[in-house]
Amino acid sequence: MKIHISKEALSWFKNEMLVEEGEQIRFYVRYGGSSPLHDSFSLGVSKDEPVDIGELVEIENREFFIEERDLWFFDGHDLHVHYDKELEEPSYEYKK
Image (cartoon, one colour):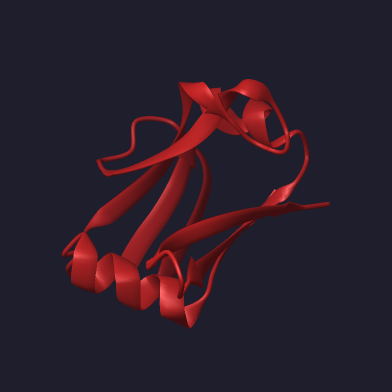
């Protein structure tokens, strides 16, 4: 499983979440909502420091990661983070 962040999504993280160089963004599983992979579970995002990294990608000196305990959610899929211009927020796609 890999994390892919588009340039437009990276810009959103920089501008909206104020993610500076050296900071980390965590993608995590939260109970509630739904996703194409699981009912009753969805993907959350927060500035956070890693404890037990399961997957990590560094882009422009910013780290995006998923904890080992949350890898089950992706069921072998890669996470592709895009930017939705209409909603003005990130969108998530899961690809095998």
